Length: 209
Image (cartoon, rainbow, N blue to C red; front, side, top):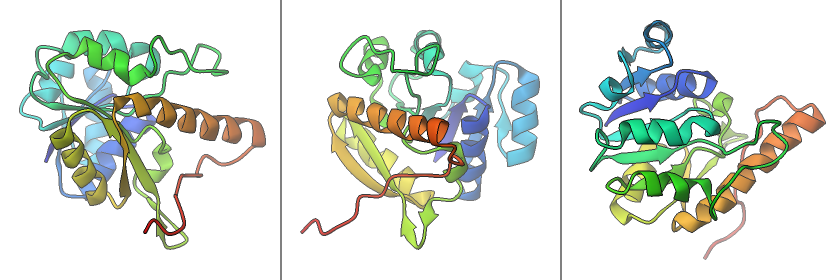
């Protein structure tokens, strides 16, 4: 796939590195072209001049920006991502990181409202940056939970997740993004309060048949 990564912080750079390693064509944008160029040089991606440049020709657009920036980035990209697939890898943390800041049932539903012509899939928000290129723990692939209302878009996201080494699980419609956002908040809170090393991940164990 041609994957556009919007954001070049810890998550965006880790996404870029993992996707390039999996054989995808990757473009990356940042708050400045210089930052995008630095991450692209490190990971093997194409540096984009801006967000719109990054999504040009992309099949999959991954939002790896702070939760507080999602709406403004969505409004900027809405015309450019029409008909593409947008992966919401963000978490709507409040300013003090003590809770989630959500207007509707899930932040991903607010994003979908700002992108009416683009299927949004919540995915990768439950995965820490340090696990994007290291998705196996003690021989068990971490599960990649995803949620969305468009079946074809979810299929593409699941294939992308598999290519990175994750075991994808369809969590249902976009309303279930709320559960994924809460799962991420729990993992973040545990690492912040327990002094963990930000490497914990989710795996659903036990028979399913």
